[in-house]
Image 1 (cartoon, one colour):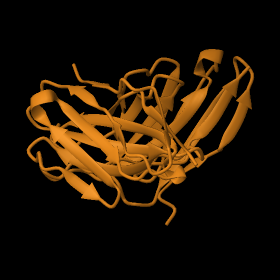
Image 2: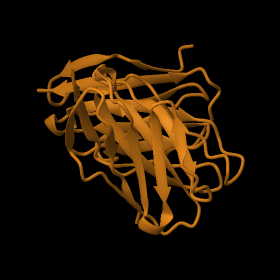
Image 3: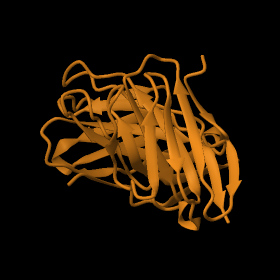
Length: 117
Length: 117
């Protein structure tokens, strides 16, 4: 059971470099999410994709772009990395809810630890 | 606006002690969901429980129990007879119901639980 797979697990970038974080899920989930986790701040939503073909901004979208490549894959791109983007990035996916009593939990990948020098 | 507050930043207990992790939430939604996630030292996020706003019954799962009280907007988590393996960061999270598509999780800042042998 792979669940949600994130690559790479670790990365070090220099300021100004670009990079794409990959996420794939094999649970046939409709919705996918990207979060960042910073010390003392919990997880904050960067972007999400409610379904294939749609993407929307979350709480902290500046400096990022996303692509929902297909139902399985949702990538996060840093066009010009900045030290403030040093963080742990989590991808999550969720099955669509069918009603108010069936809100499904999000399932998370293992995270990508990104350092920007 | 939705908000989750976990006032306890760090808790340290000795093995076999009981410990309660507090979670207080704010929302204007009449239908909403509360979640607890565990993040062990290895870094992954593990889903523990989901509770909807219509169900105020407490839940027990082995050594874990959850107390949901709408009157005080709280969803507290108790570990009975704690073990070293319970050492982790625990996150409380809140989401609303938006037609089943754009569910977004609002996380608290987490509580680091250290269980000493």
